[in-house]
Length: 388
Image (cartoon, rainbow, N blue to C red; front, side, top):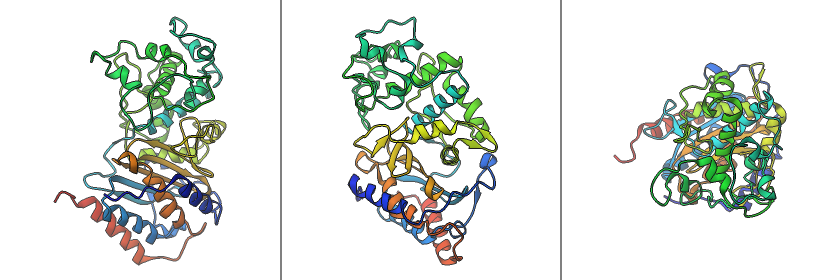
């Protein structure tokens, strides 16, 4: 497969140019997709079928390991395409996109007063535990530090690698399961002051899940089913727990692309869903703003990444993305099995095809040729076994 990974500075520039030109005004939803999404032609929502078809053609021609592409504008599915053997009913491992959902649950817990705010010290939630390597810096770690991956802990858990850090709890040196993951994390030595340096660490969202369970009396999955998934009409989500019964806040969630899109659409609508404020708009704003700079993408918030000016995304290993473009009223979802070097291809496609396809805030003239090409390429991609 040919790599089409663009340098970070290039795609950030492209995104900035597109987002600051010809933006369509936000359109209030005329329905809510709780019981299912409605579909429409791209042109009816001011988008160009030809560019979306070109994107699918590039995936096909270059044999890019993307499993699904979903493009929604104004609440309507305009592109819903899957590579063989996937379809809309197949749940996909969304990897670290899970962490963005864990973040949403923290916001809901604050709204419902299970938690006071993001400034609460983490160790206060585990008063019966004694942490090793305890000093003033470790005592100062807050919920916000967990959300922003700025704990200061010496956590050897770099993004896109499964060789250390959290894996030490799963596959320790003696090949036995660790007896206590929470203790493992809070015992880690400090590498610096909290809040000063971004360091990816799966232990951070796992601790958030443990805190949610401590404060609500429910596993994070059960809390999500009651307060997030249920109201959105999201069902059949798989989210395992560790041997101690704590939901894996850092990953391993199974979710269908249409349901991934509901998470993005909730955030696009500032936490509002069918007349109910599921998450406060203040939490949405705080979560998606760039809190600290990173090398993978321009910035990182509360387990949401900044992907360019005014654009934010949940991002998971191997190319799982829930991308929200508020200025264009667009949500895009990708799933796949991309290599580390190709991980950001969906963000490149956003800047190369999806955002440029937004031509107007009002319907475009019907494009029967472009719509037919899009349908043909989608059908070919879904029905053709590449091994044949």
